[in-house]
Length: 534
Image (cartoon, rainbow, N blue to C red; front, side, top):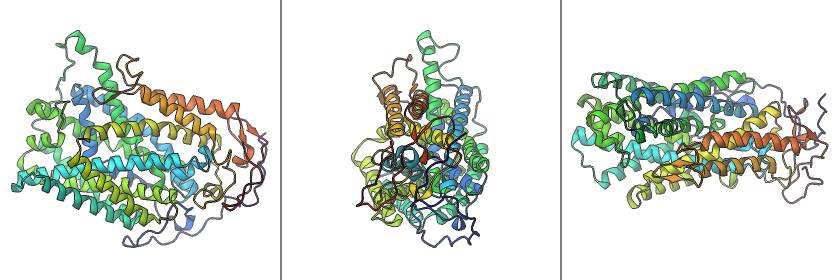
């Protein structure tokens, strides 16, 4: 029978009586909540809202570009479709459990990670989400800005100069920043419109390209390929699948930013289902990108040259004239969705690490830095390919962090102490998640070892190949390997070095042992805890 955890005098019971839900605030009311615990009575979002935000953030040109990668890797349409279906399905399954932390704890996922990486170790999640958001925000602004300028050039003869691109990037980035400053409700409104509008425009695109589409597009691995080319099929297929899979996984650090507004009583299966279905729905932009890439490869192959791919340019080249305006609208709407979901989470996490900044101040600061990064990357450096590599590296590091979070949720039976989770944000010490001077070396070790192994086995030909990247015959096994290492190592460390019983709820631990180690009381920053957990 599980033993009861010792009480902690300064941490009240995390189970609060249900409160009557408040009326939803106006979309033009600037959000004031940071990462502090949101009372259940102030949570007015639903699982459907989570679906809209997660789907809206991926229902974009950026996802279409990822859908084009199987063709860039030489796969046929049917082989590429199999890679897309496999990548989206596996990625959605990995992602969906990350949605439950928000409703359970009323805060974002980085703060929730305090329970598994320690009060100080939670900064790992904050900086992972910060780097991920800046990378994907930059990609969304670049791709959408290029599409807007390209479409305007075809429609109105606008000159494609550096000035045109600079104005497009600036206007787009500022629009995204304004939405993020207003906060969750305004972002939700944008995504409600974006989900419907972008979906309609993608469906219209099916009619625009139906006459040119050939599902029998053969790629380079057909019957006539030589033995050397055929040997590259599996590395290409797995590489394309992992690129597709990286899209849903990239949302792992952000789901709590949105699901924290969902009432705690909402069934976990409903919240997880919304996250899962939001990624299954991205098959629309993925397949749009795959299908149009196969048309581009047949009609304008220069645009899908792996050395210098230009999916947006190729799409404009093969589009009928009447679809140029929908492409521009897709660029605007889809980019707004991706940009807001990325930048909002960045400002939120930044304010949790540097507590002197409010959410609005942090959003303005990070947004300004991100915009500067976009302009430097576009006009001073040739780093678009480097950004792709950078994003892949972030995913490789984020996935083991997600594994630690999900297994931690399982062994804790979904029980958390909201007061102890906020110790870092309040600049306090002690509590259930203090562990060893604010660090839980079990979760930290499982994370960094798995992330390091993933990087060592990464194989991105022409971009980055780790020291062991060729050991699997050129196949990139970094992501599945880091997943497995994180899971096995974390459970092994929890079993060999039990955590304090006080870190678990009334029902005790599941699957692992616990230790009779005292839990230090929560004290002010200047006072040292009277005893330290292990």
